[in-house]
Length: 283
Image (cartoon, rainbow, N blue to C red):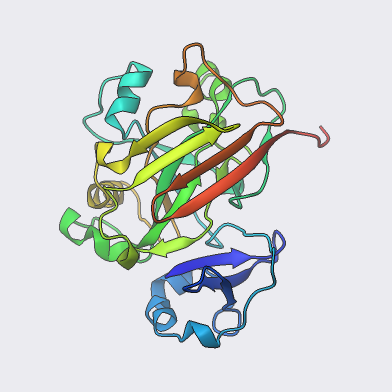
């Protein structure tokens, strides 16, 4: 299944993609695509006759595919070539940092460069969506706790991240820095998440063009590993790292500016598009 949420920001409705790529309205079946739905209702949704569901209106906004996300856990340096690109050693254990849930936005919403930003950057990633509570789970049982996957652009501000005192979180958590979707693809539709192509373009130039086969850590390992340090709850997002080709890795570095357009995608999980805009709010 490909589950999604559509409509104005803050008033999204649940939907499901049909065989023709059209959106069908699920609001008569579930109130929203919530952590509770991921935990309890995926089997019921899979049994629906989608053709009997009403179609959504044309040209609707697509929101992030899950409501009520409690946490976004990110894995750094999970691609061998990206580790080499940054000049860092391939990690023996996953490098973990957090991204604020207030950064979540839809896959086609604008990305807002925050006040004082000088080094905005892109990172195409696939994210794991947790479906059942995971606490001290083994690698062998880890996939029992996964609901599915989605595309996530781990937008970053490198000056905030690398040049200011402290951890990476403040360079990762600005508003709109976590575009998710367009849909959550349930795990049964992805036979091997470690063999997916992923790519990202800025203004038509392809900067990232890789495959998840370059991952250092597997999906079961990441879920099991994280569950040793924190409880993973339904709806939690694990963003699994980005391949080589980030802006900071270019020679010379290339950073985002207002008017830039990012397009990105992961095989089987869909595509995103974001226009970059400057912050225009108050103090």
